[in-house]
Amino acid sequence: MEDWNELRLVLAVQRAGSLTTAAQALGIDHSTAFRRLKALETRLGVRLFERLPGGVYAPTAAGQRMALSAERMEDEVLALDRDLSGRDHRLAGRLRVTCSETLAYSRLTGHLAAFRAVHPGIVVELVIDNRVLSLSRREADIALRPIRPKEGDLWGRKLADVAWAVYGAPAYLDRAAGRLGVPADLSLHELVGWEETATGIGAADWLGRTVPVEAFVYRTNSLVNQFTAARAGIGLALLPCYLGDAAPDLVRALPAPIADLAGELWIVTHADLKATARVRAFFDEVGERLARERELFEGRAGRGRG
Image (cartoon, rainbow, N blue to C red; front, side, top):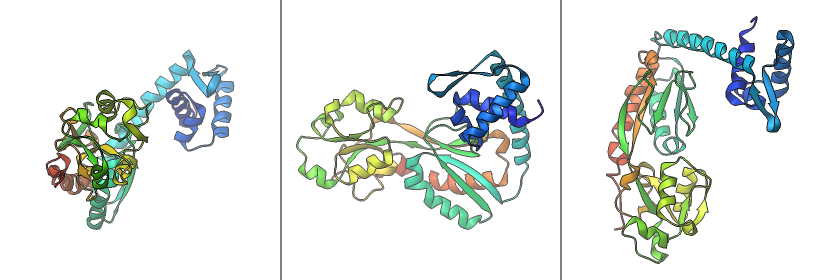
């Protein structure tokens, strides 16, 4: 191959299964990606992808072989990049951090302001994404994750357990009919929840098992918007305690956290980057600040109805 970018294009299309998505990932427009892929296939004299209905690109045997080679090359390039970054002792440069929408909204941004005050030479790029981004592929340098990392090449520590509880605005609870003592009583109330198509979300699955579909009066794919809806008095919402307990205009509708939804908060980086000065500074400053809020994350600072 004469150009590494050709291999990157093939790999991106193979991963995405779509030329449009691959072009977006590479930061080029669709027409450029189409032209480059067509030129590559013409030069090689072989079709790399079958064009299927709906814009789906399925790799041929040749396309799969090329994507595998590209992935091995990418692994080598990323390993070299991590190795060189791991030797960087400057408290300056870019630091790419990823976390969930709720953590960024409620707790993290204030700690980032304090971090920037101490380390003005470090430019923080915050990627708010509920997906688990790849630290090996440098999609982020540091991740704040709600689950224990399983990859063997990652390094980090647990900051706190994370509890979930049911919250409502006092005005809603004052006008609501029906008692609230155990989770089953939620079926008597108006609820805020996820879209019906939501799958693989622990809290959404728990609600689906616990209350009938008729109880939901408002649905959204944003947990921050569910929080906002509960504050507006639309209904009760199931929220992480670090979000609900910190809101002065919400109280717990059920006093105890939901035991089935107990989770964890981890701060994680790739093992090759753990000695990088700006990574260690983030662990020391922001990680410690979050760890000091353990009582809030674990639901031990909650307020029921007075």
